[in-house]
Length: 420
Ligand SMILES: NC(=O)c1ccc[n+]([C@@H]2O[C@H](COP(=O)([O-])OP(=O)(O)OC[C@H]3O[C@@H](n4cnc5c(N)ncnc54)[C@H](O)[C@@H]3O)[C@@H](O)[C@H]2O)c1
Image 1 (cartoon, rainbow, N blue to C red):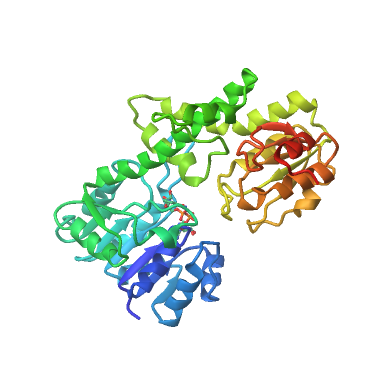
Image 2 (cartoon, protein in one colour):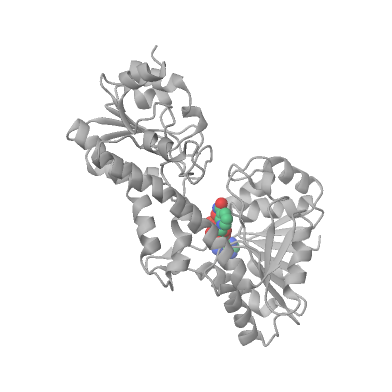
């Protein structure tokens, strides 16, 4: 099979995209340096959970339209090369594009006229023009005429890939004359409407959509902390703000994290006109685990050798993605208090205790991820029955529906009618 498109970086973004290209009829070469990942794919298995992709992977393999390699240079056999590599941030508040640089260097000697290179990763403003300039500087191409470079940002949320890939407007920012058109032709096969723009506008639209979400959730998180200071109930205040009020709409508190939200704001902070504004937003979201630990200490005293059950390791509801989850930060903070931490998560691949084991005899139970499994009265009833008497329940998501960030299990169970 001679590949029509190569996807380099078979992570949570690249792999679902690769299988969707194959499902749309293209011959696809998937590239990843992770041997375990490729071994799973060669076995016909998705290495992580993304609803609906197992079937699409199986179809692509059966049709002979998917092949795998660890060597980035082999991607040059395809006319179109899509980079879906990770783009973390350095602690210097600066994009870390070392994976992109490594792959570009591997591809450079093999690029030829007619090649299309698409940046699907989230990048700092100006990165697409940098990539185009890099190809011009090192190979003497004129981008937009003899090779083509575009930014086509991934905007799909984890767990919604198959539901959104064919419908979310696909933003295409091409460099020079022909790049946008070439990239649009490639992505049109997935069925979503294409919106053409400039590379920097595509970059800004992507990172500012995430900044909007990150700031949107920082406000109720800050309000939750303010409410503790004034002995107010954040869920009642939120209801007062939103109820029948046309200018309401504040979100609910929770652990706001994940690989995208936790880092993408820094791509704007690199060269901001309001340095620190988005760092403050990050500080609010990042301080929620500490706020909860301090709230527990205020109510229970020292946490030393007290059993604390942490419910949920994933960064958000019903996903198995633990990367950059604030649950891990919460656990680290609790361990620094010398608490005995037990963890339950019904979705992630990491082995955890069962729900009953985690809550048995617990002095406190924290809902760290609002998995749908927790959103039922049985959980609260079980805690009231099986945890220590006067077990403190910490539920910033209001997963149990008792509308208290901190409350005692027996009282909350009575309040919600969940008592056994
Ligand atoms: N995860 C999401 O929900 C999401 C959503 C939108 C955008 N994004 C953005 O998409 C990009 C990719 O995110 P992800 O979550 O898929 O990352 P990821 O870390 O899951 O995947 C990156 C993959 O690239 C591979 N890789 C790294 N260097 C390589 C090399 N030199 N050669 C071959 N393979 C290499 C890694 O092994 C890994 O499998 C990031 O820029 C991210 O910000 C992610």
